[in-house]
Image (tube, rainbow over all chains, first blue to last red; front, side, top):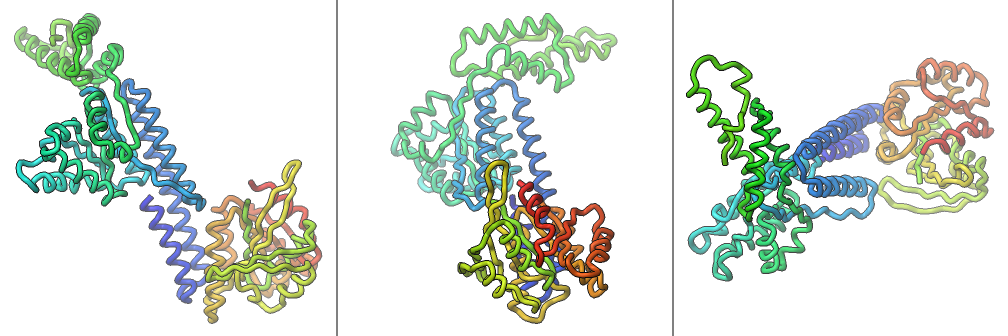
Length: 316
Length: 200
């Protein structure tokens, strides 16, 4: 959007030069034409980039509701832009969000993609993601918290500030410095309206309690995304993706073993159930155990063996 | 509502075309909205004859602001409203009078916003060799092709030598849609009506 705006103001400057008598009509038309062509190319390139980001979102395993809501948000931003261009009343789209879900359910991945989406759509200038938690925001003495929080906000300007386990900011009650961090964040949302998107993330139940205690926050965070736990089938898909990306392969009996392990964890799961993170830990451990197995065995190791993860390599 | 702008060099017959085209479409009373370069607006009501007498002038640059007329065009079984914008003529080089330069800037500004451009050229003057489609008209054509709709109106076809001028225009703008018209005699207006009504 910044590019298109620059071109538009260029074209106003061209008209001013015609008025001032320093450009002829023919020269001005040629200049206006290159402005229009530039704007068109820019718009096309931008659309292609938006499409690429959305495809990346689609490539994430599961998360049907989240994907749908992100597309709604993208469509709303686009339509508001069209409306503004037609001179219709266009509401600025509030983009601060609450992410609810267990760890390892894709919250950070989605936040990172949203940052890029907002950048390509011209909503945020940079679109990078700054991940923080309580310890990064809350200080140890009076005045320290505001200073630390402002420092994180400064890093996140132009992008997304992602506060993980945000409910912990309300942990200590009235006297806790967490309150000060919340107030500083809220103030930054007002002061940097067009250059900061804030995402508060955490466990579903804790986030609900957090918002109940801070009713003022609810209206400032219009978008709520729920990240459900992955199903076993989705976790298997994630595992396959991770393995392939690292140029390994799950042998058939390893696949059965992995599924059994996931069921075992799933049955006795609690809030600490690791979801995607659990899968990653298992796979990374399997890669180490495979290495150990191959080294212990000695002798020649062929390409197939270097890639194969066997059932015996998989452990919790 | 779609907006069509009528542009061209001074004295090619833009105003006469707009008024007579409105008459051709059945308007006897005209409401013309004048939009000054400083964005002041005013409205005047005319009988068609009065408008012709007052707004059309053989002197170049008698139109010095945007003059807008609303017309109804047939669309399927019903009709659709189109805004026709008459504009100050675009001249070659840089005009010495500031008010005319301001009007030219206004014309160029509105070119960016409209749905369609009707580019009027004086086919008779070109046929007589008094004028040739120069850099300005070529730039209008290049710009026009970027817009959703763009057509050339080869005007003054009622005059001798205009046929020669039309042939020259077809050579100059190969492949470009050119409608021969006589704004004075309302000739070629059916085709203009069809073209404008088709663009949506």
